[in-house]
Length: 572
Image (cartoon, rainbow, N blue to C red; front, side, top):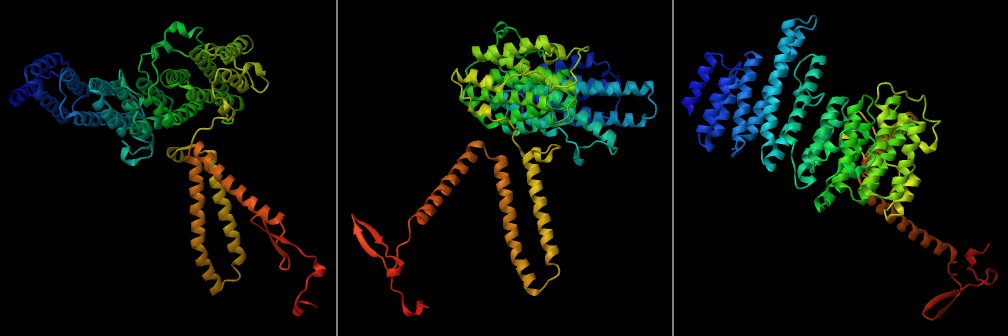
């Protein structure tokens, strides 16, 4: 086999048969069908090694080798893969990054003027990159589920992050960020192909925690294209019944039953997943809607994500959470604390209308459906820019303000609570506005939560007060004062650590745990107050009072003051 491959590579190289590569593809198909299955991975290794030796050749030459590898992988995927799965992906990702680096170097050298040859070279590098992505996607999509999950986490771990020097491709800041984004886009596109058609038995298998966190991180980045790719990957993993095509396009669906949504009863594993990671999903969707550079496709993908979560994971508790999320998005558009453009505010209103219309028909609560339909009908007459069919038209005219809009144009929490409560839903939480939970990655991102801001203010106030104390005592520095300062340092460190633990608890602990903690403290306070009241209301026994015992209880009979006899030393 080694001799056959050596002769084949040499013949193809000498006669320049990699571009075009029809003969090379046919040659390796014959080889793959001729060797035994257990040796097929050896052929793949040799093709990858040959690609490495020709990494300085023209782009189309390398693209021809990658396309031959794709055809080889297509044959291997029908049988046992062997132990080289991650090696194949690792080498392909290295070649992908190298191709991006070549493209950036070419762009840097032609920054002043773009010639025809440069444009052709860039398009040729894109051909190499697309061929690598197709190979990664095809190879990954034909793996068994357990290997596909491993490959998904492996690729996600290779996605570079802005500001990490080990991930950069160029010394120039502009080209470095451009290259980092280009690699991010390429890797996320390959993940889309790997996750396509992935039908896990439960969502926890499709979205394990080690993969969910790094996947959702790009959804907080300041780039609309990256956020779109993340949402498409999320759709592939959540949509287990091929409903996404039926939900394509953000719109008001008149009759959801007509599109024949497929769904099953939610399993225990799915319920456990949504309890553990539901808030994390809601938070990323909520923050994704508030991005200023969102375009039509972003809102469409966000709507589809909400609809798929409703289909695949929604029980009564999740439905309440989703309603709270939708109302919070509507309030975001109305109040506009983030100073969003009017297009974004109207687009969010249209997204909420489309989703609540879908949700109300899915749960089939008549009063809820009636309220949603009434708001949509009112909007179609008085405010068509609040509906998705109109807001995304090029000639749509936006209002100058939302403050003067009538309440009939908005979905009202009390109406929804009344309608759902009448059908047996627990609507107590609807009165609590939705606030996204704070996580560790949020602390290091460009967003800061209210809790973080408060903690920063507390630290600043504490530091200012300490500085004031030092300034006041600076005039009387003695040995005793220094000794006290050293002794107080440990106490201050303990207080600071205690304050940090309290803030961290309120940031991370679930609501039920915080409520139970506060309730236990309330009971303790109540007991202490009861003891104090008992001592203050009942007069203390007089030292000269008469002692009587009645029914097992000790009682004191107090004596008037003028009848008491005090010692001579106590009398003046």
